[in-house]
Length: 331
Ligand SMILES: C[S@@+](CC[C@H](N)C(=O)[O-])C[C@H]1O[C@@H](n2cnc3c(N)ncnc32)[C@H](O)[C@@H]1O
Picture 1 (tube, rainbow, N blue to C red):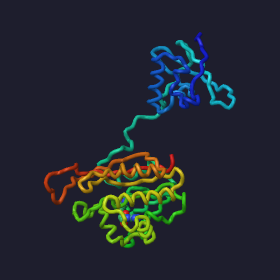
Picture 2 (spheres, rainbow, N blue to C red):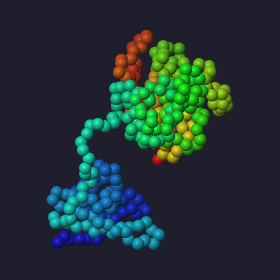
Picture 3 (tube, rainbow, N blue to C red):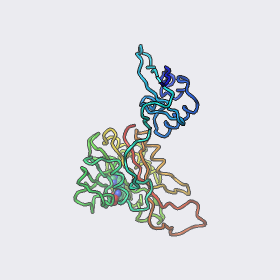
């Protein structure tokens, strides 16, 4: 027969996740260490593992934890644990999830491929079928080339007014979307993400200035608002690119449902000889708005980028990758 002992353990007010569990259960260091490893491997707290009844194994010995909640008088609940030492215990439960089959058919964090090849992977992982999804920078619709659109309720728009397909609402600014508050499950945003003050390096390639020459296309109300908020000095160059991302994200927060998914495409850039890690700048700012970054997928270009004129020597690594950032509204 196994010998049992009664002990109490944590989630006391001063130890809410029970991480100082050894103060409450006197367990051997090797057992505690195994418990800690299990917690790290599974992302659960030590308390949760004990409560789930998972056996903590040490060589041939098992410590099968059983818990029950004691009655409390308003104080944080303390629990009593019975644990047994010995070989003849009940069938062991492991922390490993049984079943499933081996596969390498997985969505990966990095692809050397086209946007239309990568985008469906993101939908598969983060946007359930039947979701209401809008793409507010539809462009040529490249992202959607390999997506079965019948599986979603799709809404497409773009700032452009001309040459826009019939299924796309033209002249819509991502900073002032025609959707009700909390009405979308997911939103896609892929604006021009390079500024090119005078150079030719990014001509025809997500060139920011090309789209915003004289602010011609910008929604009038948005333009007025920017003018007002910046005292007539709208941001320029890389700051203008960021400003577009940030304002659009604030609009995204408005139109997305709670836990809605925001898929943002971006690329880092060198501005005034300085590396600007746009993806980090976006992640930091959007966190402040209440977006949690769920994933980053890197897309590497198939071809080798060059520059039209290399003055002196190269200063920074030439970027040949961009990012899909996946955010969730809320925690
Ligand atoms: C890089 S392209 C998008 C490509 C698109 N994802 C595709 O798959 O073809 C950028 C698009 O954003 C649009 N755009 C630029 N500024 C915008 C804004 N403020 N609001 C909405 N669309 C904008 C441009 O007209 C352009 O079509």
